Image (cartoon, rainbow, N blue to C red):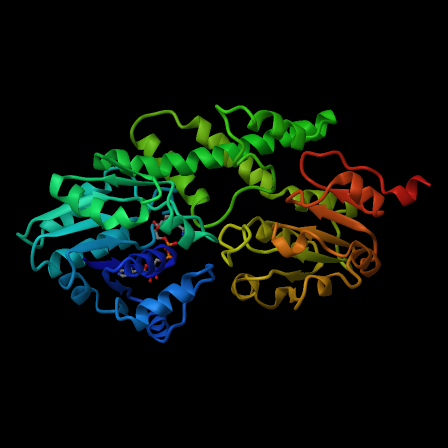
Length: 442
Ligand code: NAD
């Protein structure tokens, strides 16, 4: 099939490469000239396991190409995905200017019947606006469908290739048939294609993300209760998660959700709920809880070392909002680091993938270390934001001898408090009791 994917960002790049891999002719359109030029030379601008290889192979095979000429991309295609950003507007609602700009371009470029699909996460009712924008510029028949994307950054290719399910909000039997065929190669292992009306598909994406965010804030509240009451959240999590009605995923307490999706999608859903005259207090609480949780490590450092952190230095492991991505949008690490810098501290940080991103966010205000161990020399404490695999089994003796004091603030529960006390660390994690270092007990 001939497919255009408009917007070559996180989602567009993955969708384009994966659809090309399954034999379609894909044109990926974007208005960012530098990005498109790089992509055509094989430079993938994001870190995503497997994506570079997929893009390279399909570029070479001639099934995938990148262009700034969005009009031609649309004219050459029967199916057009809109995969541009939908950032939060000032009031938290999704800003649809990019989606509607693309819709206008599609309308102007229409040269036959086409299926247009919103892949971007958009509020219920957007497909209607997209249709109106397109139909204002053409008499050709357009099918406007919603196919929200559920990929996770860090496992995006894998998620697209082997989805849990494909949600298709369709406006016609014709569109349903075509999209079912397009997705057939990705659901051979039994995942279902869920066909539904367009508004339901639009709501499904927000509801799924808001449910996941709710689980995170819920567990962070339970973690705080565990700390206050002397319980251990890892036991509670196991006990709760083994209930088959609940399930064990997304029950890990930590320092709050970040990234490009959960924060903005929860905000946008709250806004849509309000617009529809429905009470949104459950999601308002989720958001408030998350804002508090993102301050947890900073609050702990301040409680331990005081408000005045001048002359102190902190080692930071992990900057990305989660492992296997370089994405630092809304990352909890930024809250801690800004707070440390504002109190006069020096910060020396490491991340296996997000160092370039960190430079964009923080510039020369912090020091960047080539390895995680290099952050430690002379630091007053180690602060951990991201559960990267290479951080999990470190040389504790090396950490201890490099730090000025053996103090660790762990926002991701990488280690067992008992073991850490045994290693002689003052160790604060989330929802589990801190034990005094064994050395000090005498
Ligand atoms: P992104 O910011 O990484 O990429 C958006 C791209 O669109 C940019 O390259 C930009 O230059 C391009 N663009 C903007 N206006 C354009 C126009 N008029 N014509 C052509 N290109 C244009 O965004 P993203 O992370 O890929 O997210 C895209 C959408 O997918 C959002 O709605 C997001 O909520 C949703 N989504 C994202 C993820 C994720 O993990 N990132 C997952 C699921 C859904």
